Length: 633
Image 1: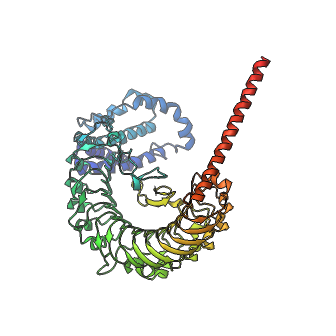
Image 2: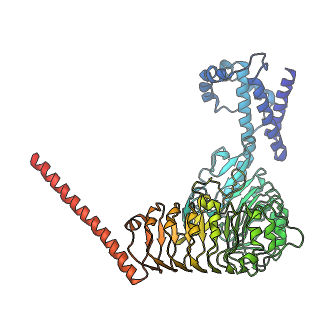
Image 3: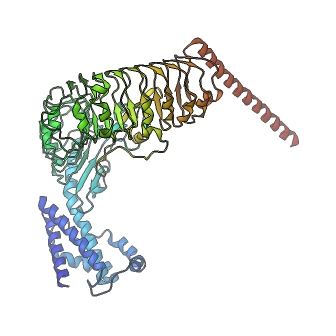
């Protein structure tokens, strides 16, 4: 009993410090006191705190409920102490325990539970009070014409829009004020697929103005998201480098301009950094060396043309998992490490839309963790087996986790000779718009992920709760580029279009029963479209246009119930269009030659005519029925 009394004294002392002090002393005291309260609450509910028996499940569920509810209704608004003064502990305790509601209704054990529950809530409130003032200062510097922050006035800042607090201390840990009306691409939470467009109507939401230094008072802040707002060209404030406990910082498309402040190096706990915006630049990336916890780095569209140290700096980040540097004006050779390769945990690398002129270096072979490679829209060259090192090694045991390989719009030459049989996880293969020749390798049928109709829905994305980072990918499907995020794991696609491939449509390719999109357009393929194409049950998009296919359209195409886009134009096909193909495929392109055009539109006219006849007959029949009813009346 004596030890329990000592625990109570410690709690009261800690509460006093937490409520009547400032800064780190307040934070530490509040945290310690709340933990002690939770411990003693369990002892009160347990045995022998007051010499009584255990409080069992039925006691809590039945015995207490009868008087807890009305008591809480009255006590809920009761204030234990004056927040603007620090009363004596004795007066404070007596004021609470002698309150009529408490004194008349609760036995000692229950009275203590109510007391400690209220005390915990008061500790949370007192701790968040200083954070509340800091947030109000932050709000005062913002321009908010659409009253996004209208809720930022209540007493409890933890209930304000975009604010999340620590459940134990009540301290503000997250500010999320991203613009929810923008399709956010890589961070979109609920998207399935959509045409990606960064343009948006800023009148729907955007915040602007200046960033108040008061943010530096939020010592527990872990998460800050101001993305897709309009800060109208102001520099990224240096004060962000003082938020040393940040784990997540997203300033993408927020209208910041100028040099990225080097003092971001102080954010040693930062795990996700997104600075995606076209108006930012750096002279070097030395400041990244301080981000020793960094796992996800997004600097798409940031001008890195002066940062000749980009590769050597990134190689000093041993925890990096995702690296996105597209549209960064990088040029020349893709560098190689001068010593050892450190980022061996890398799962995602996106160097697309730069100006690299080289082969893909051999050091890629040492990153067996890679799942996503996008090096499209550069000037990479060489024969693919040589340009990628030893392809049988690359695409064998070393890359068994690879899911996405996008090398489109480069200058690769030669035949596709590599063996893909060990790429068990590959779901997107995009080699379009190169100078590849030869035939389509039958080994494509060995891609196991594309051969399975039922696949485990494993989403891309990494990170901690509240800070997860989702992958996205532009896929050429249904005649346009669609961006997939949430459903990326369900997409399987092969795009070999715009090359110099020749030969026949491989019969083995039709074994890919789980393939969703196949694009072989603008090549020199010949022969017939195999009847066994009906085995590709999951096909949603099929583009064989601008080749030299001959023969008739296989009637088996009509069995592809998911097919939503079919383009067979600019071939040498002949014969009748299968009736069910025209009915089942919403987007059908066949017309290039005059004969095909005539056949196709005659076919459409016939369907429309039949529908009009049926509608006309139904109207006549309905009219006859109504006349009969009138005569009967």
